[in-house]
Amino acid sequence: MDRTPTNEGAVPEQRPFVVSNRLVLSIAVPMTFAYLTTPLLGLVDTAVVGRLGDPALLGGLAVGAVIFDLVFTTFNFLRAATTGLVAQAYGRNDPGEEQAVFWRSLTIGVVAGFALLMISPLLVWGGVVAMAPGEAVRRATETYVAIRMVSAPASLANYAILGYVLGRGEAVAGLLLQTLINGINIVLSIWLGLGLGWGITGVAWATVIGEAIGAVVGFTYVYARFDQTARPTWRQILDRAAIKRLMSLNRDIMIRSFALLAAFALFVRQGAQFGPVTLAANAVLMNFFMVAGYYLDGFATAAEQLAGRAVGANYRPAFNRSVRLTLIWGFFLAALTTLFFLVFGAAVVDFLTTSQAVRAEARTFLHWAALTAVAGVLAFQMDGVFIGATWSSDMRNMMLLSLALFIVLILVLVPVIGNHGLWVALLAFLGMRGISLYAMLGSRADRVFGSSTRFENPQ
Image 1 (cartoon, rainbow, N blue to C red):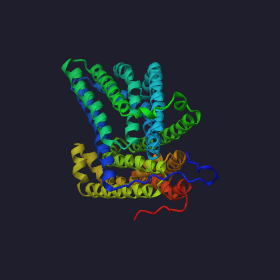
Image 2: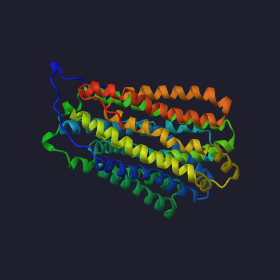
Image 3: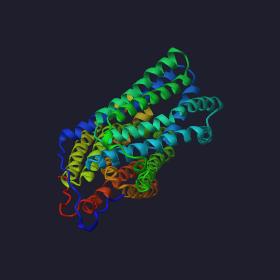
Image 4: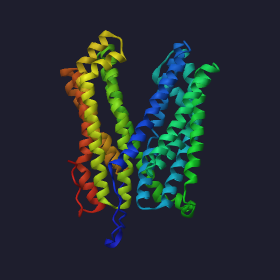
């Protein structure tokens, strides 16, 4: 969405603020640790169910996790859109609109959560049909999903809560809330799943309880910090134009998320055509990109908040500096990551798999995987900037363009150079996402801030 200039040449008020390395790191570092708690939770759940000694239960957990990944990825927009809109209201010093954005997102999240709960049998059926597991796995999946889906209203409420605190730059609060949710989940998963012998049922209920407690604590924290003198009216909360803007952002971010999922699903599917050894090698090597993704997401979150705040404050120097600093930090850490994996990648591969065939295959393509960190920096960071500035249609369009390039390169390169071509296509996909958005950043900033202060290219 674009911010339109005020009528009759009026200049919006500027609210200067300083963007420093300390400010960038105060958001990026806590959120990096917050994002790390999620895979830790997955490892614990897998270990708990794995110790039960029934492969069908482990399969049910895996299928159920895929279903939830797909469902909740659909609603990632609640967090991202809320962050961008709250950051802009924060930059304008408009606490009433900050609160209104929160109530709109929270309402959408809770209503959508109850809707998901009602249609959960259909979701289970669709997931089982798509995965086609055996009867025992199907029963385990149904048990896990039916219970865990009870957490849907609280889970989506937590998206809105996290989006609000990140929009205000309160990354430590975001870290504490995520740690609370996942920490409770981990402890209860072990206690209920193993201690009380509930198995996969206990793991599912652990998630429900963790999300519910997190939602209550998070809502209490947010509500207690509201400026009651700026409390919005229901008319302001239900403003049609504001809701339309939020839904438009949500639509664009959702399309972008599904296009991203489609690209990685296509990468896996194409890798499977080369046989199980190459498929396994690619899966091992993708962990290199996942490692980089944790901290790149942290700096993308910093870019979201600071760029959004700068747009709201109508202060281009802060916008320019937020882009520059998040980009410098991102490339610096990505370069270190790439260098690390080029030097020690073989040892990491050996740690992740004991199969000699997979180890040998992974070494053949290791250099491509090591480059994913550098190739992906600009994509992560530009996503953050464009989400914060609420330029969602551009982000959506460039993602679709990058996906199209990815598909074309697979069709052209894979028949000629095999799995090397698949990795080259992935690197081009990551690079195209970032470069295409960066190319339009200057003109976009001119339209919002005016061309009197040109965008400065980071050096």
